[in-house]
Image (cartoon, rainbow, N blue to C red; front, side, top):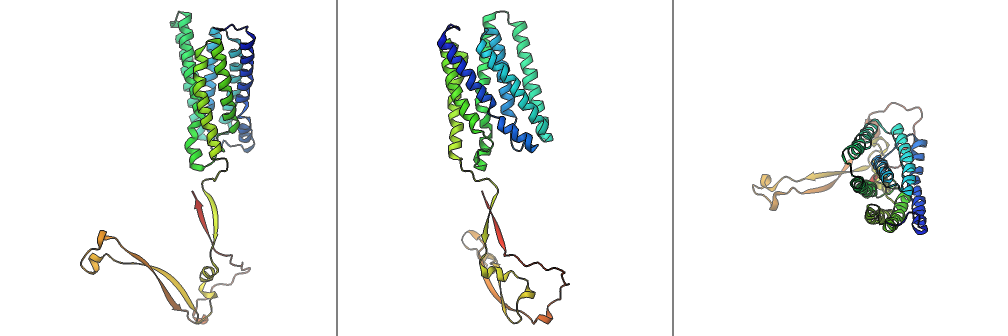
Length: 309
């Protein structure tokens, strides 16, 4: 194991602390938005619950190994991630709040508490305790890198990275590189190994930002102007002059050939055509009289809404 007092190791560790601190602060704009809008919108709590558990696991590992640099950043991580979850619970809808409370209770309290009790009470060998704690910490470090990808379906479906913060992905990627070298210099492969995959996951998240940086939100509506002739045809019958001809477009579904001619066409499919029928309108006096309107509003042009998916 590399000497903790080595200037190079200490410098890399300090840089890792700074970058990890920026990673921890990256969701601040997200939660400021939650606070100002009093709503969590479509944000998910899973990444923050996973980040809290990871910080708790590495805090325990740092206590066992007496690694001061790991101890400081993970103490800060526990405090800040707890604050994020508190804000989320305050403004989440009832169902999301219940899910988050259950998730934190099971994962961050029950499972973590059980792990610490088992290692402290049943594992007597200190080296074995460090190995087990390091392996569990590495597994959850990977989960933290993967957690933001839980919304990848939402990102692809909406073609928007609104709910995948760019700076979180960016600083996770850079931080993974630094902590990899820190673990390598310290010969602590529990720290180095997960950051290799962390770098790959970080690059994958940033690639989503490149692909969907100009989002088209699902459910966006574009308006298509109906031609002038169609607008005229959609006016009430009372507004058309007597004796004029109105064009009525009617779909005609032809019956199966089996019914008409006693035989079936290839595939038995029904055919559909469109017929335009000219109807001569009766004189105005024969039209039903509508009750007068105090302030008749002008009829706006008819528009069709087309959903862009």
